[in-house]
Length: 290
Length: 287
Image (cartoon, rainbow over the protein chains, first blue to last red):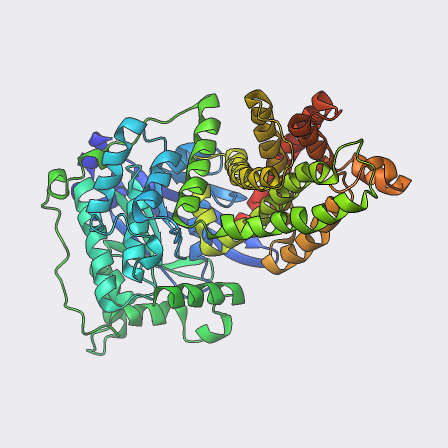
């Protein structure tokens, strides 16, 4: 464990050559009936980097996340998490994962501490160590003072940080965050990200995050992949992608990551973006947070 | 879009692990393996259930109303009428175990709705990404339902005792009662979670739940002996685990003639089948 934490000291740079990738998807395809959600996707996330998976609604991000988190089978292709096959070695993969789903998943009828303690139990933290470990996780996300309040009284940003603490309790090597700041106000968003960055700095864990906020991706991600229609259309550091687009346009303007996104996904997003259920879920999450 | 936000430089990892006080969180916990996983997960689920009940006892009280009314109104009235052959004991005594089983079943049937709610809320996906086999998760929920039903059963027993029902206080028999209540709840919660895995939405499950709970209750020996049922209803009662649960509760609490070994075999088998079915269908909820 500590060896791996050392090898990731400089994330992002020579990622490809890093000893072992945190996540490797090769030729991953997944269909819901006739609809191809993921279409022959190749992706590798280097150990220790913060990797942003971006794309419009319905691009297939969630399906990729679900395959990596072992929630969906891998019908065709291969998904590996630190070398473990996500389809065959599910338990081994789950022990390496900390997962924060898009929806607010903390239990409102338990205190913050009880919420984290549940995950300590589910990850086999020994009774001797449990209390100290739970306290440490709550301190790491700045919830020590609110730990014994019911989670139902937390603000949206606090719930997200509580979920972060739940995910951290097992010392995961890969933290998966699905739209971690959706529906939060700018101050809460910054706070959530600051805690993610601080924890990453302290533990050297790999972070795989999906987001719709291009400014966040630009600011916090070492590398981003832009997905559209089940494939990766652009991959690189935010600076690289922006520089590439500037070179291609060659009109003196300075594009942003959002322009890259628009360039990749096209403008006809409204017609294909996301199923009703996804939209409803997103709105519900947003309204519960806000 | 968010231009108001200060443009921070990309943070550099200068802090050592000690800076955040994360020492414990750097080492993954030692994984339990083999047979130790199941009891640990079941315990985790039961602890959560007890914590919730400790924070909010409203449900405990509101759920006591219905059994209390059954005993007070239905029980007291039918005791006077003496229309139902009970084998010589007052009807209220005969009814009390049936009402214990009924209130436990009503609690357990709610678990399917809860698991759909958990799916919608994202709790279920998060639980499924922990190193918890699906069968262990379902078993955990099933026993959590049992723990909740057990606490409810204590309330009903107290109400029944207050109404003058002569119940046993033999600790061994009471342990047997607890086991029967937990096994029955495990089955009915799994039945409900299985249906949840088939119908997938809360609205449909509410409909199905309503449609099966009353028949399960009336097509059992909870209110009247099987002997006075028409043949077709008796056949339904024979395959209804609730009948075996009530039979066992009656035998244990009142000392009436019963078929305890058969009752336990049926309840254990029913719980095992329920857990298997619900675990197989749990994946459908996760998609």
